[in-house]
Length: 138
Image (cartoon, rainbow, N blue to C red):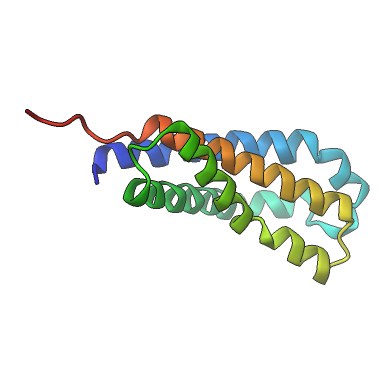
């Protein structure tokens, strides 16, 4: 495993997760969250916990990147898509579970699940593009 490439991959993955989470939750789902405001923390409460959100996004980037680097690096972009799809399915099980145990509208759970899988597929593409094995030495 190449530590420099792994670090770059983690950083690229983190940047992608941060940006796509903003688009998903801060833009696309914002009206749904406002319509169900009684289910969520207030904006000031969420801002107090923002570093925890960043830590969660970083841990996600680290996990995806290390698994990619140790078992899939050097494979095709199509493998990156498949990797992202199956990692996304595994990762998004929480959306289904939360729908079952909390008074969460089904539309929000479905949007979380679907957007999370798409996000993971795109993250798989990012990993495949950034983490490539070092060229063979002659």
